[in-house]
Amino acid sequence: FFYLYSMKVTALLVVAIFCGFVYAQNNNTTTGKFYFLSDWHVDPYYNPDLTPDDHCHNVSEIVRETIPFRYYEHRLHSEWMKNRILSQPDFNYGQYGCDVPIVFAEAALSAMQQVLDTPDFIIYTGDMSGHHLPTPDSRFTAINDTIALLSGGFPGVPIYPTLGNNDCYPDYYLAYWPNRPNEWLTKVWSSWSVYSAIPADQESNFVNGGYYSADMGDNIVLISLNTIYVCTGHNPSWSSTRFPDPAGMFAWLNQTLLDIQSQGKMAYIIGHIPPNGDWHSHYLDTYLDLIYTFQDVITAQLFGHTHRDEMHLITDSERGAPYGFWLQTPSLTPKDDNNPSFRIVDYDTTNWQIIDYTQYISDLLHTQRTSDIKFVLEYVFKELYEVDEEYITLDSMMSTISKLTKDTQLFQRWKSNYDCQYEDPTSRMEYFCEMYYPGDDAQGACEDKGPYQSPPAGIYDDII
Image (tube, rainbow, N blue to C red; front, top):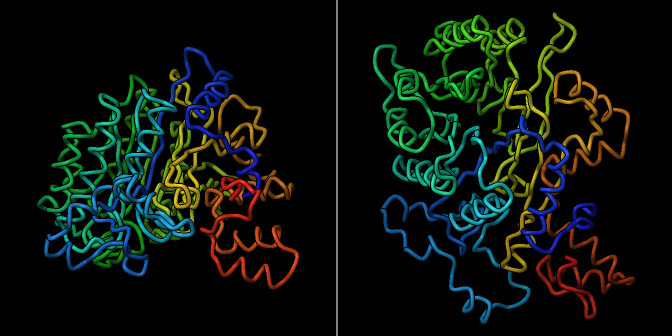
């Protein structure tokens, strides 16, 4: 985390200008850019006066639909600052352990607009809704508010969402009826059919199975999977013996990839829960067989769910050598000991290969201390991992992961990126107290004041 603060900039506009310099390296007519987002987990009912023990919202008020309007808006800034005690944090914009209030989502959107105001499209890999929302209406409100916010912030830009476990009600619950549409998916469709770029002819696939495909260009097809039906957390629990192919998704995926292959096109596959131990083994094996068979047409696999910055190879003991990889983008929500983030991906508009990507993060502790939201550049993939290849491919991903196993410093950089430079605020303050004071008593007194205290006289506030 010390590296992060050594590169801190003082204005978001500076970040945007710097990013323009970075992108100039790939500034040619065949380079496009898109946002790769996931797990915003917006909580329209966020209450800054409550704590993570209450999920930062009042369940009984949500159920009774008596939420005071003030929960939706930041308290008057001048009034808040006038009455604020310096050591008291500003939780209006969020708390570690809770989901994202609307005002923080709006600030993130504003930052994205300054960095890249006209992306070619937006891929959103699931979980628009906050956790623990207690009613179907509150869950749907969060989903609808989130995609409406993105659509309004980037008018005319295609948005391709995929279903997350918190986009269901209750969490992970998604029933399946072979001969009729799913009621919850039909409700989600009523929002996404308005704000997203899911083609109208995919309505049947979505409301019956939660998956769809979309032509993003003349030679590229996006495939969005329903990973809820195949994950181990699915409710109601079912066996793969009874449902070897839930909603016919794998048969559909196989045929879709066959068609893509025969037409000389390429595919992006997106989903929420990545294809690992969180999937039932039978479904995972079926999916990996398809990845192996169609590895020549699958350009990218993009997932979310874990709230972490991850990259994974696809291999198994039977086949030996890796035959695919996927990328995971971290979350906007700071719920799971992480800082908020978003990602921009560079791609080749002729063959849709991934060229590079750039990660941005916001230090929530800084926001709580200053009532100021800043998103700063965290890293650029090729620059950090010294990738010389033109594209991020299986070979370059294998090489990158190999470097991490051999280079301790690079591994520590990756590890810091994993949770977006998060450090427990109390633990972080302990480091600074040791730096400020040589004596144990003074260090202890400093630690007792907590992470929101003013630093000693003569030390600038923005150091911590």
